[in-house]
Each structure stands twice: as C-alpha cells, then as structure tokens.
Amino acid sequence: MMKSRRLVQWFYLVICILCGSATAMAAEPVSTGFWSNSAIGGHDVLDYYREGIEGSSPVAKGTKKFIVTWSGAEWHFASQASADKFAANPDKYVPRYNGFCANALALGEGLIPTSGQVWEFFGEELHLFFAERGRQRWLNGDWKTYQAQADKAWQASLD
Image (cartoon, rainbow, N blue to C red):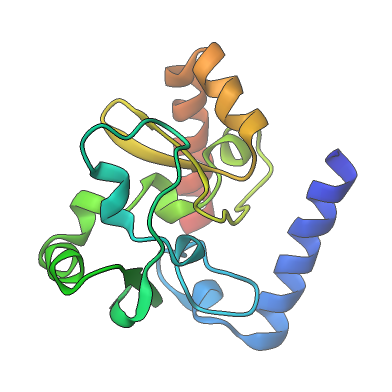
C-alpha cells in the first residue's frame, strides 16, 4: 500500500514538471486530476455542505456548463446557483489544504491529490482524503493533533 502511494506521488510530480500544470505553478496549489485542471475530482464543493449529508456520502459532480476558475483550477458545479455562491466567497467553501489529502500532509507525505470522494468535516471545515483509511485515522484518533501536523506541512509546501 505504501509503495503504491509513493508511486502515485512520484507520478504526480513528474506530470506536474513535464506539463508545467497550473497546479504546480499556482501560489496555492489545488488538488486537480492528473489529466485535467478540475479541482477535487470535479465534485460540486457546495454539495458537501447540504443539510443531512454525512461524511463520505456521495456528493454531486459538477458539469462543464458551470465552472468557476479559482486559484488556477476549474471548480465544477451542478448548478449556476452553486457556481455563483462559490464565486462570491470561495474561501468559505474550499476544502482545507485546497483539497489535498489531509492525512498525507499530517504524515509528512506531501501533497497527495484527492478525488473528492472521501471526506469529512473536522472543526466545521471540510477535509478531503486520498483513501478511507486516512479518514478513519482522523475519526478514531486525535484529529486536532493531525490537523496541526498537516497545517505545518501545508505551510512548508507554500514556502
């Protein structure tokens, strides 16, 4: 499992270098796909905030019809209303660490992109994870300590 994660990290780094992607060049990188500039797997980030939804429940995919460009990435939405709400205040809805895996950052593994399918709210903030195992670690452990570790790693990645 660890070898495959390292392989994904190296593959992503090579693609960023070879393609000169916006993700690699942005002041604050955003988790996008390997072959696209769609943030968080193209999911509608506002759908995570809908009432009654629980962590890692499926969220709506956005469409190419409703796109907002923010921090060098394309954020897809299921409706114009969602796109407008995001555009008015992106900082309110963007996942912590711009959608990169919170657990990987906490473990010192760097910026691991996510698909937007594994998620949870911690302290009223949306966190995305590469895999369910990382989400479970945060749910069953000391998420505040993990978040402090991830915050340090995130800041280091921006320096």
